[in-house]
Image 1 (cartoon, one colour):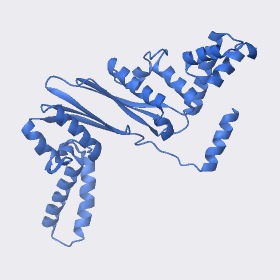
Image 2 (cartoon, rainbow, N blue to C red; image 1 turned 30 degrees about the horizontal axis):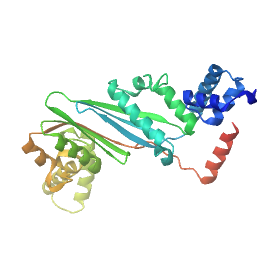
Image 3 (tube, rainbow, N blue to C red; image 1 turned 90 degrees about the vertical axis):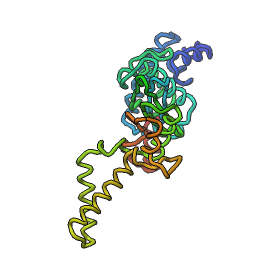
Length: 296
């Protein structure tokens, strides 16, 4: 009976499951005080809430990085609102998951979700527990790991937990690795060098430049030179090596790296929510959705 449920029992169930106080009390009442049955009810409720919330767009969240210098992991974990993205428990969850991914050398989200995590049977179960407690769709969206071989080093940088970068270089030093990571965050290079740009992109840009150049009425041989110059400028803008160094715009990244005998092997930039289609809803629609959800 409800009167048999003590505050100590509710507190213990909350510590075991991470669910809210009222949900723990409700489960204990339904289980007639049986702690094991109450835990099972919470777990089933969590699965239902997680399944229900999975259809809602989660485009906010955080980037987290764990870096041991020879290995690094970067993850994006999404939620629905910026408010939750700033929640201390969500912040701790994100970093703990990144640290676990680094420690266990995870290469993908699927293997990460299956790992035991801080008292929960798995990261996936911990994710569902957070959904129960917070009430928002929480998704571990992506994960990338870097490994540095001999003479290589990893630079990493996070800006306001919304932008994260990793860069793997050979040669150079720790300082330039860090500065490159910061540069990538700020300048958004799409490729390291022009030879990485897909031919389809080059062809499309050339077509656009040529159409514009033809309007000048100049001879074809001149037009070709104009277009080639524009293509070179375009490549410099979207490729890391051709960009002006953010700390010294008078030098390109390539010029900065040369005296350090440094070569960029790979780079990665995450931005929270990039590529996620967000469906805008009116205030009235959001209120109605919340009202319907509270009745379920």
